[in-house]
Image (cartoon, rainbow over all chains, first blue to last red; front, side, top):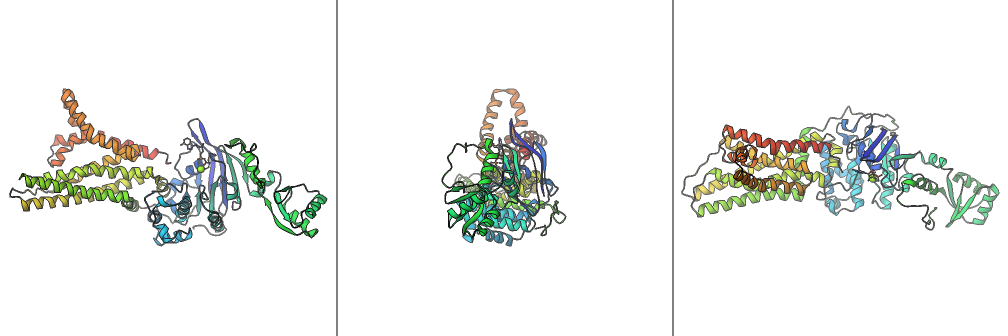
Amino acid sequence: MIKVEGLTRVYGSFTAVDDISFTCRPGTVTGFLGPNGAGKTTTMRVMVGLTPATRGDVTIGGLHFHDIPNPGRHVGVLLDASAQHAGRTGREVLTLGAQTMGLPMSRVDEMLELVSLDETESRRRIRNYSLGMRQRLGIAHALLGDPSVLILDEPANGLDPAGIRWMRGLLKGYADRGGTVLLSSHLLHEVEQIADEMLLIGRGKIVARGSKAELLANAGGAGTLVTALDHDQLTGALTDRGLSFVPVADGIRVDAQPVDVGRLAAERSIVLTELRTASGGLEDLFLELTADTQRDDVSAAPAPEGASL
Amino acid sequence: MTTVPGSTAMTLDISQTERVPFSRLVHVELRKMVDTRAGRWLLISIAALTALVLVIQLWVVLAQDQTVGFNDFAAGANIPMNILLPVLGVMSVTSEWSQRTAMVTFSLEPSRSRFLAAKYVGTLIMALIAVVLGLALTIGANGLYAAFSDNQVTWNLGPFQLFCFFLLYVFSMSTGFAFGMLLLNTAAAIVVYFVYSFVLPGLFELGSALMGWFKDIRPWIDFNNAQNPIIEADVTGKEWAQLLTSGLIWLVLPLLIGVWRVLRAEVK
Ligand SMILES: Nc1ncnc2c1ncn2[C@@H]1O[C@H](COP(=O)(O)OP(=O)(O)O)[C@@H](O)[C@H]1O
Ligand SMILES: [Mg+2]
């Protein structure tokens, strides 16, 4: 649905986005992941025509954004939740959007309810909104016209943990109904659970892409984090099976798929108390792939206690 | 949502969607001018200051038993309008940039020329409302003058008079609008407008006093000065021509450059 072909954006002698191509399909959530300054926002701004591309092309549903009539009805956009008039109320912002798109005013109340902004909050001026509330308002605005494509730049920024979980469910359901979602983040854990497809971007270039499983496979297989009632029994079984493992904070990290570890435990009647994919694999991959684009030297920093979980 | 479950179509079905009608864009732009405290207070100030100026004028005129006509009150009403309407013009454009709402606006109407046209029509409608208001206040002032003064009262209020009224307000508002687009910054645009409107006439005056050749061309390039016949509602053919040439320099040129700038500006 979203097609980016050979997109390049140059500022003076600096290349913010460097010849990137990708496609977002209907029914999927695409996570656009990269460290600060990688070029995510620039790419999304080009998509909606706020920044002209130096080279390359972006189409949404086969059209340039500029050629989509009443685009709010087709493409929901949230680029910067703080880009609202500080003196308007949240309700007024949605009302302006609904009027432009030609929607009934009942839509405003529906959206406010969807993002859990209550009556009094909706009548407060945006200068008095927290970042999380602005983000909720921005999501409401993006969804206002019931679009089939969503372009969200760091929508989880400033949301509380419950809010992030709510948003995950929202976007997942939206994609399940056939919508196309592109959402960016600089935090892996925000997108890895919902993104069907992930694009890793560093210094303007796409450095890796694919589903979470594919990315992990490329990174040398997924690790599993497991805890058991009796750790000695478990490590014994793992050694028998020839699986390599390392004890971490309060569990064991195994270089194998969770299903293999689970099967082994079942065979030996070992009681497991936790069994899951260790995201460290993806996190490491993310840091590694974007290593030369990081601002901070992560390899030199000592990992905090339990970080590998 | 236009898609159906399981749909994998890679194209958007836009057959059922119309472009946002221009009238709706204008309506939204008008709403934006009054839906913030800043916007509302600006409008209230315009009305209140105009009324205040007329009250003072009336009071002085009656106290000193002067003979004045409708035009004099119109000129009085024009003073606050001439200061505040441009501010309204400036702010209608620059607030989109300083408050960064242009990002949202353009994601709902990507055609920036349509957006600008809608905004401009919105400000013209505001100018029209200002004319009606200014007129009502002027008529009120002249009516009070008629009631309290023994001097002869004039009511020279023909269609041409009305047209001149409107033209003046449109000029003020449009100049502000142009400077707003040119600078895309509220404070800078207002300062530049006030320099243009209060400092420049002095410089023109000085120039004509010092240089004979400048004195000759001044009427053709001084837009502020060229508007005086309109305030009087008594314009000769030559004065129309001077209004045209000076207006090209101080109104049309900034408008064109401003439009060009907005069409190209990267919205941050
Ligand atoms: N108008 C601009 N002029 C110069 N550099 C810019 C401009 N806009 C963005 N950049 C640069 O482009 C790079 C990518 O920025 P951005 O797309 O915002 O990154 P991200 O959203 O991934 O954090 C950054 O280094 C940023 O400083
Ligand atoms: Mg960004």
